[in-house]
Image: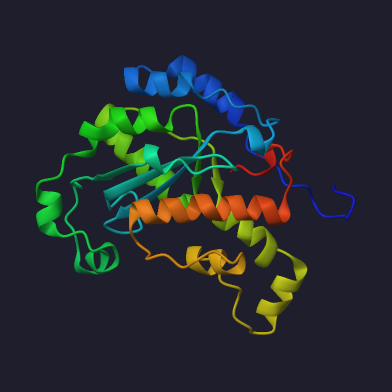
Length: 240
């Protein structure tokens, strides 16, 4: 228990999982990726190389929907490396639908000429290797990539992430006052990406573009650490 009597948050045992995957992975791309996953949970967050990742998809269920675009922005707490950014439009194996097109504005003609995810996987995994992924809502990027990689390479890919939405939820959804607010029938504090950015004085960006949302997520984490954590905070207290 922590000094205030609340149950201390348990971090997943990512080092053991990643070590096991390093031994078990057989596809060369995945083996290189897991060979580079050597981050210790005790590493101070200021020393961690990171990459913000965002995806646009045909829906919200990784078992029924597919990836349409991926944006990556490498960064540290002191610098966003836009020159190293990556952005791909890929052709999903599932058809686009009207609702998803209205969100991400990627059209049927754009995906018709786009490569399958398998074509860009070597570049994607190389860009992720050796960096901790940062996302806003881990229940999209991690499961979608796992399902898509498994369908193409026969092996899945799971990895630790820092979820900026989860960090906001710790502050605005999980404390006693937040639960009391819901009990009183008041709407919960929004922890969506743009609402979260606004609380830290960050500018509004156009949403639902994978590269722009990846940049927005990188900047949000920088602001969250500056406002609520220290540079010495162990990464194991932040990742999920």
